Image (cartoon, rainbow, N blue to C red; front, side, top):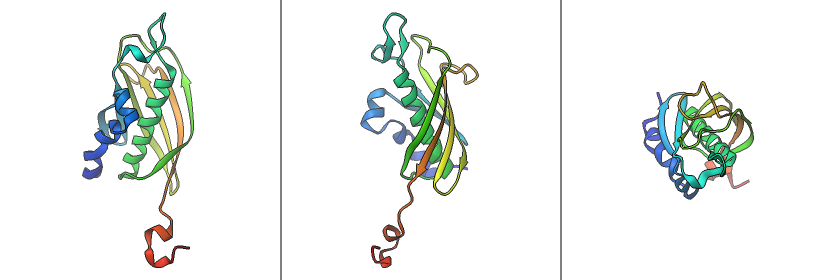
Length: 153
């Protein structure tokens, strides 16, 4: 069961930074080990004015962010992480005029790394706009940071 303190801050982690807030990212649901986010369709996100299709940059940003959120869910706590590597496979254009959803699951976690699969879609994950595979590095405080008696070495 997810840590109640983490569950309480996940909505803020989803949209609390200036970047994610301006994009309108919202936490949609948590069904551990999966997490789902939504970004409402807005005309300024259009990558192709002729078709109204969303920008690929928005898709990859959403996949990266929901992937990081899945790492926190797997860790069962908020902790400093960074995207080390991410591959995005674009499978089709996003439908114009529709919100974009993304779902992610951290499927492997070790002491220093987390591995995540994520999907972007409009209605159901079985018809993805894009899929990603990512690796995140987990920052662990150095011994000197955690133990003041270690002498700062």
